[in-house]
Length: 430
Image (tube, rainbow, N blue to C red; front, top):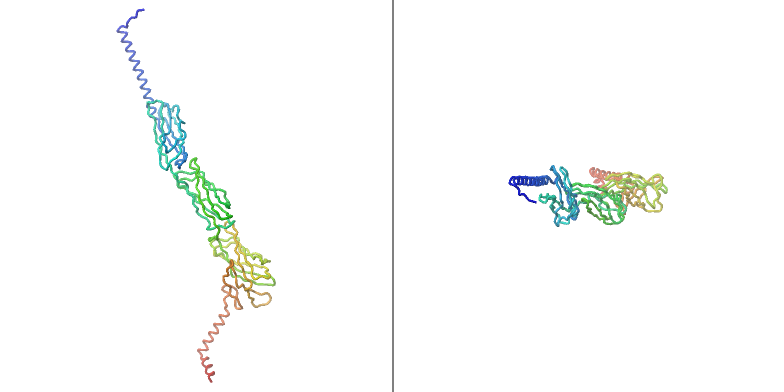
């Protein structure tokens, strides 16, 4: 076969065709590259969220990054990751090593789990999104992450000065959140040996930054102990704990009610006695359900076995009447029972002596007044008695003796002025 060389005309045609084809390929490649560059430039970070918003030391948190393609064509994605250093440790490394395409106008979320094994401070892990086209620049975005370990504050707002064995006392706590983010699921639980609480625990719930709430527990101790309140809460998914303690010691409640009886009068008829007097609340709190009664060896009898007073406010008083038998005894106990606002029952006993009583004139039944009353074993001083004493209080002043003394004094002065004493003296000399 004879190969005929191209003539000049055919050679020119081939060269023109080759140049046209080369230009077309170059234009297509350039257009594709330009399209990829434009598409990748339309991808941006639109939202960042952290849970919890502020980490505490050793907390685990989640960082969610949302990106959106604002372009008109899809962008092939290669990989997404979060670049951290030793301060924040990435827990889900490699989760987004293989990605598809981000369609036009669509969004995609990436969630990373980190652990704050570091000191308090602000750290900047970097979100990195790489495209399938190696020539296109990837998306880079730094995320500020704060680590701050201040916990919630717990303080005792109100508590009794002292406790009593088996008596209920109210304790109020103040729970406050000084953090810059919300804490969740707050629960308060009391704990202590010999402690019984009406509320086994109290659920507070969530506290926003700077928010506080009061909780009150009704505590009944059976022994002196250390009372601890455990406060459990969550920062994100992380459990935390705070405590506050106070000693439980037994003693007298300085702010409570204090009952004192006074002005006691006793009258006797046969083997029975009648007693009257006043009961006063000299304490600082209300006394409720106040009753007065005698105790053994005295035996209550009708009609006034018990004297029901009711409620007594501080500095208030009320009269009482009792009837009883008391054979062969020199004194009897008088009991005042009352309750506080929590329903705790209290009892105060006054020993009343019967030996110091003296009889007034009269027929039939004799009237007696107690010369001495002992409050909690301590005699406050006996009342004046005698034939010129009437009643009790102001009425117990010996008015008759005073009047007689005044009359005698006035008579002596008048006689002296009229010279009676001089005349008597002269007669004596003669």
